[in-house]
Image 1: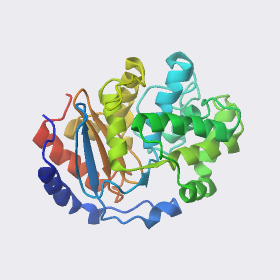
Image 2: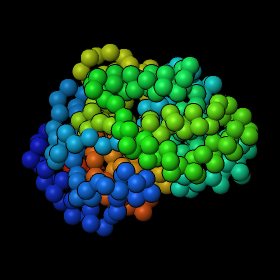
Image 3: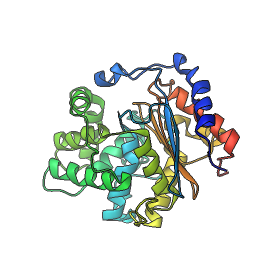
Length: 309
């Protein structure tokens, strides 16, 4: 059962907003520290090509880690799973998204999955292109097609802020370069990755992209098969097992849909064959997930019986 009522959705937003005060906006990336932690918006895009929403759904935000799913879908589509999984694993981790510890203890020395930073960096390094700008342009073109929105671009201020402060990510890149997981120039990989994370859109765009995954790769507006069913399946599986950082298990029990969060406060959720969800709520919990966004999804899951389990 899906949301069919804007007013009810607005009531859920008002209820979920109450917990925003208990979270904090991301401050380790200076540009993200400027966000208003009371913001909360949601769009629900149905496979029937209709949409319900609440809050300021036109407000744009950067994707951050949500971009990991989209980059993975792009690289899987071009390179195929066999090649991609030579460089990144398929197992969840209980460690924080920016932890390096498993790189040292895992054998072989490749990231456990594409949803942690190390794995996402490895995936980004596989994007085809003669230059970093060419790689980025091709990825943005793909994301524009997913959202059916040609205006999507990246935030230069946020990208620069991340590039200047991403020392842990650089360290992971150099470590992986030692083991030939990353083979290109580290600064060029960082250039693409920080701009990838700074790609901007609103909740409606995000819900529409989520709906593509809900429909096994078919776009609800255009009817075009943008992703193969297998690529969509792989991405949704990673969203279930690893998409909400080291709170993924709890999220699967309490809400139960494939989802991916980002430290800007975005959450993308896909209810298979039903609808896609785009949420923006920049106040984060201790795991790095939108605290009001999680509360909102709990209310929605209870009401609309969203769990796939």
